Image 1: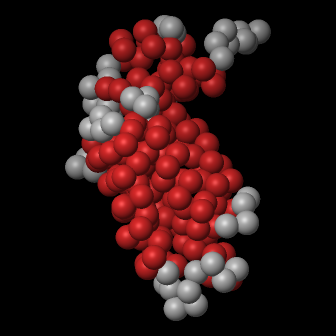
Image 2: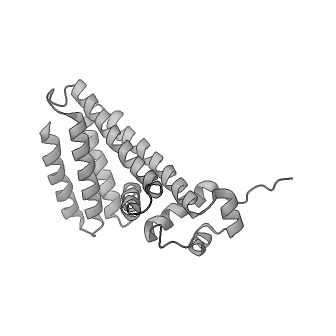
Image 3: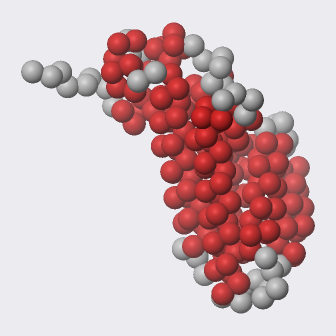
Length: 196
């Protein structure tokens, strides 16, 4: 008879995500993982496979949550352009609160792993691409609704917005005070959104 796992998979993935965000992929040892997940090595391997598999699953789980969050902010309101404001404010706010931001984890992972075999960085890069595509679809919707100039290029705006979001959220980790962070977000948005 097979034994039933004695752990909560979602809690374990959350703990793994927090650990990888804090230490990075390479600096995280299996001992660190055992401690963070409160699991023995055999149980970790049985549940998640190796360290790389656990890392990719944690990144995918939270990447999907971020996709859901972006989708809600961009598509569920009547003003798509305000949704873009809310995405940046939300992500920068998370970075500025000295807690791991899911976007920041994805960017950090992509930057850490980019020099390795492409397969090691592919999960993070896949999410960067998916975010950019989601932004393009939202700019297209804004254009259809008349919230964006008919001459605007949604693909180009999506690339600019994505690059700016990555830069601003990365910079937010410096520990800027709330006022400086708010100014940074507003300045960034004023330079992107009027391009419509």
